[in-house]
Amino acid sequence: MLGFDEPEFLSQLASTVALRPRIEEVADRLVDDGFDSLFLVGAGGTYAQMWPYEQFARRTSTLPVRAVIAAELVTTGDAALGERSAAVFTSVSGTTEDSLRAIEYCRSKGVLTIGFTGYPDSPVAQSVDVALVSEPKAWPFDPQMLLFMGRLLARRGEFEGYDRFAGELAGLPGALLEVARHAEPAAAAFAEAHKDTEYHFLVGGGNLWGFTYLYSMCILEEMQWLRTTRVHSAEFFHGSLELLEQDTSVIIFQGEDETRPLTDRAEAFAKRISRDVTVFDTREHALEGISPEFRGLLSPIVLDTVMGRVSKHLERVRGHSLDLRRYYRVMDY
Image (cartoon, rainbow, N blue to C red; front, top):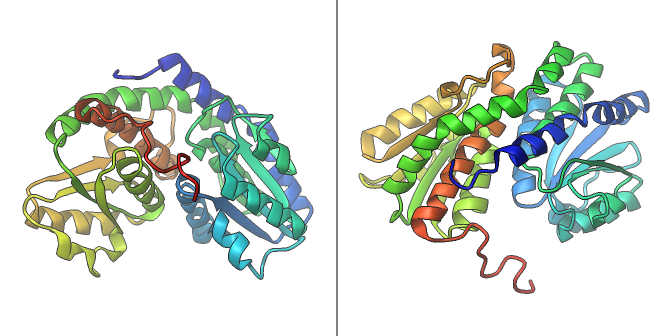
C-alpha cells in the first residue's frame, strides 16, 4: 500500500487498546467519586473527533456530556464547569496551545483533567491530572474514547455488553489493517479521478458528522488546500443542496448507526443532480471479530482508515505533500 507502514500501524493501534486497564481505572474513579458532568475538549480535528462520544452519551445516558472547543471554553467559560466536572483532552503531539490553555483554565476551576497523547514528557501530558500515553503519533483517538465512554456508561448501567465490546477491541488493529487493504483500490481510483478537482461537497451524519467535518477542514482544506462544503445529512435539505451541479464532486460518508436513513436520503437526492457522487460506506468492510451490534460505534475509525488511504493517493496524484502548510504553526496568530 502506498505510503503505509504496516508494523507501525499495528503497533500504534495496539498501544491504544492496551490502555484499557488504566482507562477503566479512570472511568471507575469518575463514577465512584460522583462526578456529575463531562467535558470533551479539543481543537480542530481533536474537537471534531469528540463529537461521536458526545452523541454516544446523548443517545444512551443522562450524564451531561459536552464536546467543546478549547479556545472558546477559555473565552466564554461554562456554568456547568466545576469541582464535580471532568475534562478529557486529546493531542497527538501534546503541544496544542489552545488545549494547554484550556487545561490550565479547567484546573483553575477545580476540574479533573484527563489527557490522551503519545508523548509522556509533552506539555499536555505534564499539565493534566491524569495522562494516558500511547505510542508516539498514534491516531485517531477513537479506541481510547470508545473504552473510556463505554466503561463510564457501563458503570452507570447505560451500556450493556461493554466487557464483550472492550474484549473485541483487542482485535481492532488487525481488523483495521484489512480495512486499509480493502480500501486501497477504491482510494487510488478516487484520487486518479479527482486529481484536478478543486471543490468537494461532503455529507455525513450521526457519529460520522465529526469525521465529515474533520476530513473536510483538516485534510482537504488544511492539507491539500482544496475548497469544500460540509453538511450534516439531517441538514442537507436546508440550504447547502442549492450548491449542487452536474459536475459537483459529492463525497458521502455512510455509517451504521440510527442515522443511516438520513444519509441515504441525501445520497439519493445528490445522485439526481450530480454525476460525480462517491459513497464511502463502512458496511463494505468485514471487521472480523466485531459483533454486528457494535459495528456502528466503530464507523468513525473505519472511515478514518479508509480515507487515510484516499489522502495518501491524493498527495501522490496532486504532488501536494500532506505536511505542507502556509500558515498553520508557520505564522503567528
